[in-house]
Image (cartoon, rainbow, N blue to C red; front, side, top):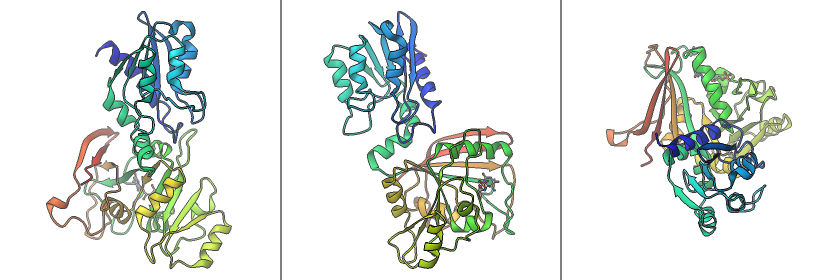
Length: 363
Ligand SMILES: Nc1c(/N=C/[C@@H](O)[C@H](O)[C@H](O)COP(=O)(O)O)[nH]c(=O)[nH]c1=O
């Protein structure tokens, strides 16, 4: 590992530690080094608060003069909350800038670099670029498409079942895995389930970890079948947004709204189109969405190419049963050329379970 990679990885580590706090802003970290010593470290902590570079420059003070700044994302060039970082870096007397990746926002990409270079600062781009881009996979998608980054999550047996054929499902995966799921929920701004999951499991869908941030609970319910005494309707622990269709009962809609539940009537006569859901969530500045099933919902997003990432928790169990539900239902692939391929895959052990992560190839 080169010196530059060492300092950039330290900046990445500081950025990553803020996951779940900075939405809808990206995760950004910065380290300032002068004569072989770290003189400033910073991370963007919360949207609206100072950027990572500003924190690092404040810590470095005069020791920034003649130093090198490492930043995981191109310094901003527009007047955000604390003024443009690129100009602050110039004012502080920094001599070299090492940047992991350019800003994905086409409106500003490259402008920060220009300000640095015009001031005579040596700029190097691309150190740990892939790691930085993957860390901000949510921001990178949302800032360009204004649609949430969608992760499909399931907990299942080795044979892909999410319940027995008698619909028993508590629990398939281990406590450690389910704790990891709550860490995942904490990172996402919204979590989505189909109405069958609400009726069958009556889930809370909250992030039950210390200082956990509960995502907005999104329920696809085309004919407003949701029981009024469901936890997601009555617990008040997080917002619940229900997406329904034109044919849904108005009376039920009014009843839910009187209980503080937002109901979105999408354009479909009897169905809710996932694309409409993503468009509305994007308009409400939801930059990340976790799909928690069931299999029909997963299929409806996956077959439209709307899933950006797959996270599967497999327990070393075999459930079997032709009618036992799996985490992916729907019509399914006709031929092998229609299957969904996953790339950049990773498998980690969690207790006796293992967690699979992969990225669908969008055809
Ligand atoms: N049955 C299982 C899961 N089940 C996932 C969903 O079907 C549940 O309704 C949802 O996680 C319940 O949310 P809660 O009420 O907030 O706990 N998911 C898992 O990873 N492992 C399982 O063994």
